[in-house]
Length: 254
Image: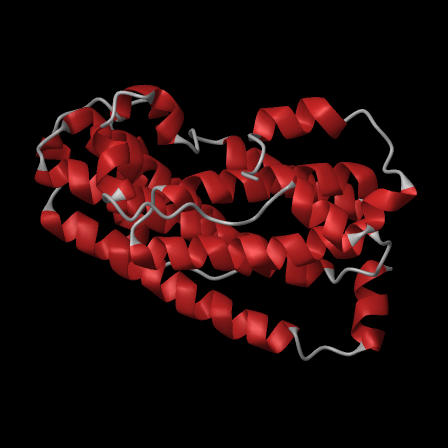
């Protein structure tokens, strides 16, 4: 069974209370399947970029970031039902991207799915959640989206297609910035200058349609290396967070 689209999840369960049987891991995983789709007959990444079907172009702009912020806010308010809803929506966005991702981005997206599914299961069961660890996992997911958008921007850059290049490099920079903010990691001046270039020339909604003269191969390399750096930093912080004790969990939730 393929995963439900994010809108269907929100409309279907956002206004309901979780029944006791929904607390079963098996039920959660069967209804919101985390598996990716692998097409052995063609390259899903290339097919998605050359298709006119807009549905294959998900995730769209800022929707995943909105869900990430909702997750953080609901968990801080101990609104567990709403937090699980947004976690499932985020998982669905990640799955949709993974279906049409290059290998490295797909691995990162599927890793984020795996980790956020565990969190969703634990929240639904009422288990304590380390909020600082949630930020690390959301940074992991955000950076996976940065990789996804960067790969698409790079493809369109090679094809000299301005709109596709601009739209995706803007979003790659946006997800990169969000990841660094969650991790409290400062980007280098070179990276900051390049990232903010996406917002310097005009409004966000028009920069995506600007011509490729605003971009150089060096800009792409700077953003690519920054994404890699955040990825390494995220994995290091995650490894540390998994070693925290129950006492740390308690203090984090107070």
